[in-house]
Length: 84
Image (cartoon, rainbow, N blue to C red; front, side):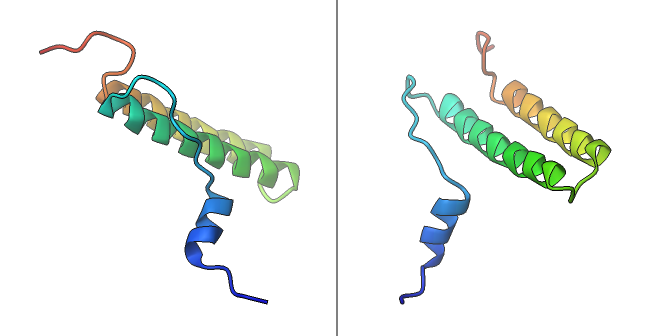
């Protein structure tokens, strides 16, 4: 049996979907942040469901991730006209 390389392992653990929207650097970066957010939420919910995290710990971690995503959206100026 062959050893999987780290790229295969990362592709399995952290899957990335293709971006189909209009290409803008900001929206591409936000899409990557959004996919990372979704992946982390999935891990947290699985850990909470499996009893490895308390509901309060899971809530606090999700709340912190949500704040990071909101900050990312604000910094990338997504969803409103850019100020020049």
